[in-house]
Amino acid sequence: MEIQREKFELLTNTDYQNGIPNGYNLETKNNESPKRMKWKRGIEFLLSLIGYNVGLGNIWRFPYLCAKNGGAVFLIPYVIFMLVVAFPLTFMELTLGQFSGKSAYDVWDICPALRGVGVSMACVATLCCLYFNTILSWILYYLVHSFMSPLPWTTCGNTWNSDTCFVRHKIQDNSTMNRSYIIFNETHFNNETSTNFSYVNASVLDNSSSTLNTAPEEFWNNNLLVISSGLSDIGTLQWHLVLALLAAWVIIFLCIIKGVRSVGKVVYFTATAPYIILTIILIRAVTLPGALRGIEFYLIPDFSKLMDIQIWTESLLQLFFSMGMGWGAFITMASYNKFNNNVMRDTIVFCIIGEGTSFLAGFVVFSVLGYMSYETGLEVADIIRTGPGLAFITYPEALSQLPVPQLWAVLFFLMLLLMALDSMFVNVEVCVTTIVDLIPKSTDKTRMFITAVTCFVMFLITLIYATQAAIYIFQLVDWYFAAITLYLITILESIVIGWIYGADRYFADIEMMLGKRPPILLKYIWRFVNPVILVTILVFTLVKYKPPSYGDYHYPAYASVFGWILAIISSIPIPIWFVKEVFSRKGSIIQRIRDSFKPNERWGPSNDYNLTKNTPESPF
Image 1 (cartoon, rainbow, N blue to C red):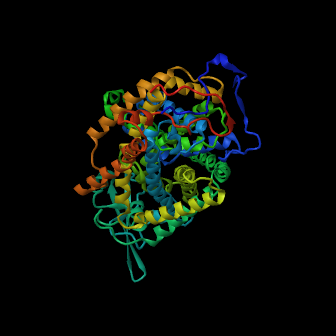
Image 2 (cartoon, helix red, strand yellow):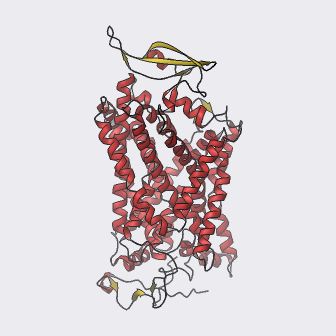
């Protein structure tokens, strides 16, 4: 059955006058307010994009990967994938959202057979919210303790410390000029403290690290996490973590309570303040003794690494986590744009500022690590960690070596807090918007209620991260939850736009918004380059995937089974919704399948504009 739709016809550049298609009414409908709320100003959308991009991965993952994979050489595959994968996919998702004014679920009116992709996006965003807010709660806990003097992770005389706790300090042996450590072993006897001092050469201590723990390590493991013996030992709820999680969810709720109206105001601070703090820390860091040692470790190129497929895989994976393609965030945020917003400009600015921040953050991180290397006598390679270890163990220990350590600790964790908030705003908004758009004639009160219920339900689920096995669960989820689905989503996006809906047809949609077509090169990237690269990397990732570990702890076999179930579960909606869509139609099975891949009557420009001309059917 032929689908009749009111839309627009394919136009060439000669059909335009002053950027507006001839014969089309692109004015807002008379006496009708747009149903969907909009960003008050374009800068709010751009700041939200930048805030979403500049997250914790810029601080604790990118610098580590850069140093691990040949220093500055890592930037070569990173920039290549930025140009041929990340930028095209980001522009595609942003234009999809802006053109249609729909959520990550409803936007698949463009290809109903793959509506499950929108559900998968919401699933990935939900999983991300559940574990990412755990990091936010940890940051809040450290931020509160950063106001204490002395900083609690700089001493060994606390109730959570063991007999093997030590604090690293530099001393100078006048005869040998070798840097060493003073180990503080403080034991409590009837409210009296006995302190034992022993001097250990750096190499000896390094070889004995399996039996000794630094004060920051013990604060992290014994005070914050109260860590259990393994994944099978869940332990009890830790009420300080429950309160931290509750505080984190309340902050998120208050910031997104009115959708983009409230988020648009908040991002003026949360998206810009981290840059101010990052600059302050950078200026101090590069002036520290030993800073150059860390920067050299960060940047000195090792061109032999370019032959290793691992560097290419990790650079692309980092772009997925850093920029956020396939999460539904770009579609959701852009759906609140005005129809003719210059989304090409926003995409370019977003990519340059966002990924430039990753590079800048490397100087901040490695300058301080170089200083710590200078102070302790350890090599930078022996100090650096990735993930939570860098943010909650190594960096706090390095900052504690500076004068007025409380100031630097507060600045550092405040910066992490703001970065985490921006990322959480968008991911929760993806979930809320998907639900709200499924409700006919939803109101502001409806949205507020759904936001409150969503945050409360997610808080209850995240209580699993307040147990003593939290870090093992966190590491397992982080390792697996997006291992397959993000690649699968972006592969299908490229196929739909490049082949099923048609790149030429989509170029006409973009032309209607922007007044001109994007570079023709994007057509071939969407049709050929993106699918080939993404499929190749997905296959390689599956073949080379290894089970996770946490420190010396190795996960049991059943953990990998659970991990792969977690990796696959967010992809399951894709075939389910395909079957559902096919069987909801009439005709032969072949006709049903063909029709399900055609845009339905609800696909078209956002309801900001009244467009009255018909468009040809999909070439599929």
